[in-house]
Image (cartoon, rainbow, N blue to C red; front, side, top):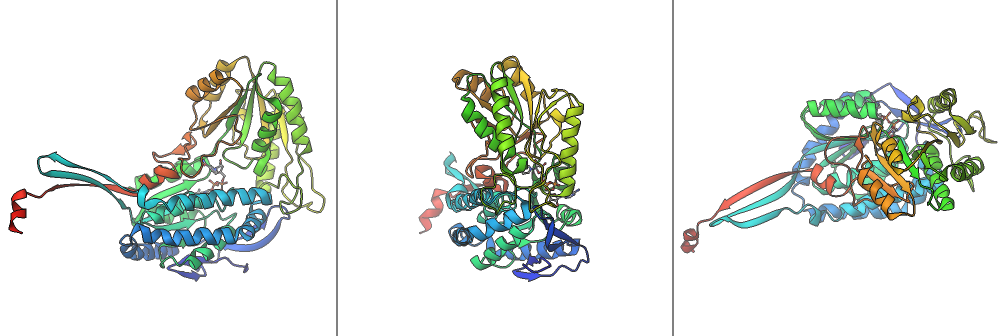
Amino acid sequence: MSNQLLNFIGGTWTRSSTSLYLDVINPATAQAMTTVPLSPGAEVDAAVNKAAEAFVEWRRTPAGERIQYLFKLKGLMEEHRDELARIITNECGKTYNESIGELQRGIENVEVACGIPMLMQGYNNEDIARGIDEHMIRQPLGVVAAITPFNFPAMIPFWFLPYAVATGNCFILKPSEKVPMASQRAFELIEQAGFPPGVLQLVNGGKETVDALLDHPAVRAISFVGSTPVAKYIYSRATANGKRAQCQGGAKNPVVVMPDADMDMTTRIMADSAFGCAGQRCLAASVAITIGSAQDAFIERIADAAASRKVGYGLDDGIEMGPVIDSNSKTRIEGLIGQGAEEGAKLVVDGRNKTVNGYEDGYFVFPTVLDHVPPKGEIAKTEIFGPVLSVMRAGDVDEAIQMVNDRTFGNMACIFTSSGAAARKFRYEADAGNIGVNIGVAAPIAYFPFSGWNESFFGDLHGQGHHSVEFYTQTKVVIERWPREWSRQF
Ligand code: NAD
């Protein structure tokens, strides 16, 4: 990759006019790999104009033709799976297997969007009154954009991109400036797939670039994934400017462990959920609420799993967990672990101040387990976004559900149990949009909506599945009268 990443505007790779570039750093080595431009508003303007021009023909292109480009893209993503996964690991830190897994989830969204000719069908009734028919059809919005976070560089853009263009819109991506390399490579594949110029565009940047998208009158819809404060900001500015917005925010996901759970299976799955991707998943289990006799059995096993997890550079053999994204993140996470201990939690496994041989400069925080975390303390509420599991205790399932619901986020809540009645009660009463039963990361597959609630989501229609089709289309209702006597002329 060159030492300056480019934007992809109007079907051409262009160098940004800005003098502001950030280093893109491999978090395992702390070495810069390339630089990314913080594109000015004028470049957003250029991309939006190209998208608006392209929209005229793209919306007239039959859906069956539009998806042929997506079929090609899917093939190219599969062909370049290994290369893309290595880029993800190098810029984001996760292990190679985790990168392959995330890529697969991205590809699955392309597959689902290939069904758009059926998914975007409307409906109709003949004779809503004598001789009058009524139809509902779906039409695309025009120019739409997505702003994405650092933790899934090749999956999250694909929660939006395939549905947006399959339904006939033209789409602009502003990827995270921390992990722009996977998007750069994906857009080279998009170029190879042959999408007409302006249908899919990439503009790198930071806040100024985002604000230009939020304020541009021709941008009709904004999809966002990132932290809750930024999600709130984007939602309010986009909607104040009359745009549709779907903004997915942060999380703090509780998992209830019942005494009747299969404890070996539970701890294995929980360790993957809490420490996989170094805890930098919006669906990571970050709080375990143990009940009764589950407590000691769980702590003992999860402490073993945490202490034995192999931490290192994600492309090395046998590595189970990589670094966190940057030095600020490492400092913040280690500070929060310390704060947890000060608030009275017991540090069962302490992942601070550790290094990996050969990668001494890398931003590694090792798996950490805090027990007896006070439910009302700061550490119980704050999103840590690192490999830290906070354990709390409850007397019974009612108290546990109360603890689950006594929080501001609502991305995911899970229960581990062999009781159908407890599972049903939990599914029914837990205040979160994605529920897992004996599942550690309840990530909806591409044909289901990614249903965050409360402070984890701002908007009405979520990413993926039918919600995406509705988000990226506007309904038009047509009522027709064709008097029978007119047919007698022929
Ligand atoms: P972030 O909010 O810092 O950044 C996300 C995007 O917003 C980036 O593209 C960034 O350039 C842009 N941005 C940042 N600050 C901005 C500002 N002030 N004005 C305009 N744009 C701004 O998030 P992150 O650190 O990249 O990602 C981690 C967060 O994302 C965590 O909170 C995690 O829970 C959340 N997340 C949520 C989901 C979900 O589905 N709910 C999925 C993945 C990640």
